[in-house]
Amino acid sequence: MKHLYIVANWKANKTSSEAHAWLIQFLNKDLISYLHQSSHLKKTVIICPPFTLLSELSLLFSQYDLPLFLGAQNVSHFPEGPHTGEESAVQLAEFAKYVIIGHSERREEFLETDELLLKKVHEAKRHMLIPIYCVRDEKDPIPEGVTIVAYEPKGAIGSGKAELPSVANSVATNIKENKQIPSVLYGGSVTPENVHTYTSQSMIDGVLVGTASLDPILFSQIVINA
Ligand code: PGA
Image (cartoon, rainbow, N blue to C red; front, side):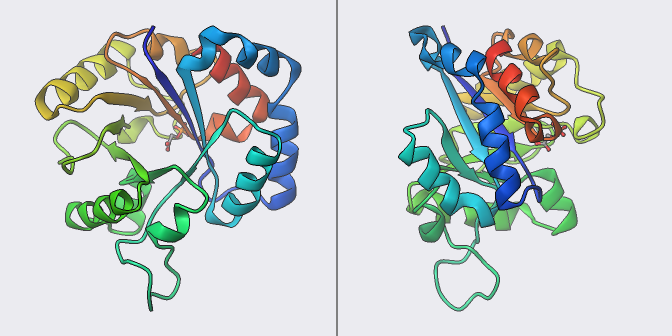
C-alpha cells in the first residue's frame, strides 16, 4: 500500500473559534475509529491553517495526541531579522513540519518568481521544514531537494472543474520520472466523491484540498475515501 498525503489548505480562512469548531466536527466518530485501524497509518493528514492559528493548533494537536500534522502556507525567503510582516522558517518550524511553497495564488497575486521560490525552499530546508512544492504544469521548474510536489492545474483550482485523473496521473508520471520526485500529489477541486479516482492512480501519492477542506465533514470524508 502506498503512503498518501492528504493536505488541507485553508488559505486566508478561519478565526480561532471557527478553527476550534472545525476540529471538533472533523474528529467525528467515523474518523476516529477509522484512524485507529492500523492499515490507515499509511495516510498522513496535514492541516495548513493561516499563520495566526499555527501556535494554538499545534498546542491542541499535542495536548490531545491527535494523529495530524501542521503545515504553513508560505515562508519568508529571508532568514529571521528585520523583515516587517514576514514569517521566517525558524519561526514556523516551531509549530509546523511542512510548508506549502509556490501555490499559484502566490505566484499570481504576489508575483512570486521561480528564483524567489528557490530561496524559500532553501530557507525551509535549512530549518527542517518539508516543502510541499506546487507546480501548475510539468514545465514549472522544481528546486533541487524537493521531495513532495503538488500538481495543481490553474483552471482546476476552486472551479469545480477537476483535472481528469488519467491526465493528472500522466503529469505525475513525468514529474516523477524526469525530476526524480518521490511523491506527487494532485490538487484542484478535490471532493469526497472524486478523491479516490486520484489516489487510486499509480503515480499519485495524495491530494491538496482547498475549498472542501474548509468543511470538517467533507474533509473527514476525503481522508476516509482517499
Ligand atoms: P480547491 O483548491 O480544492 O478549492 O480547488 C486547491 C488549492 O488551491 O490548493
